[in-house]
Length: 297
Ligand code: G1P
Image (cartoon, rainbow, N blue to C red):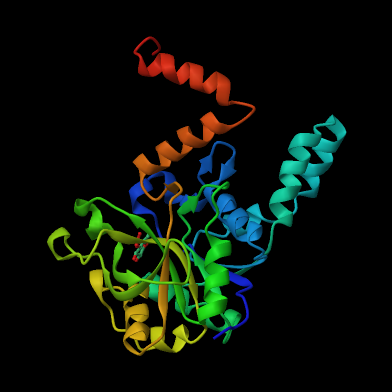
């Protein structure tokens, strides 16, 4: 089966981010900076690099600044132009040229499945990508293009997996799998369970926050009852489709995933990306080495 390639992305970003309070009282966690770009921009860039320029943000109360970030700022641009700061001017313009940003609201925090369900009327009966708002992958090792191609071939659900330590399974959706001949690093999914306890996990393959889904999932989400944590889980809706015979495949990702959803992962992402920066990296790395060696306070 071959269907059309997904051209829209949905980014669920309505959450309260309690792990980052009080920072997130007034600032959405998606706008916390990683060096000099907010987390959300890395995610929109990931979509845009894969050819997706129609991006729906599922937002909530107090999060409208996310949309402002992707708007033009003629006043700031004029100022930078006057100063002749062409590099910053290009960076400011770039954030407003990446994609067409749309929004819808998730009025209540009823779970990831519910958040994705809020995109039904924007997406319609078309395949679409879901990019979770607090994680992104290495720019040089993109994941979405291969996922979009695979979904267009199967017409089903395409996931991405990462291998996690046995004690971490209770933080993720976990899959059972068998081999697939659809490509290197592609596996066929035979079961999905949300956040199983370590002893009960069917494997160590965890669902990473990138999905390519058929539009038919919206009807299934509407029928999905609250699951783990009392929330409507996307994993449960996908498991129901799998049980109904919809093909579900996953690509095992071999690159690095930045997880900015928790303070430790956020700090790691900032340091990892800062040392890679051509403008800052050398100096920062030298300072960091001294600091870690205990020679700097
Ligand atoms: C969500 C999903 C989970 C997935 C994870 C990836 O969990 O429910 O299946 O493995 O994202 O980050 P959350 O992080 O929202 O608890």
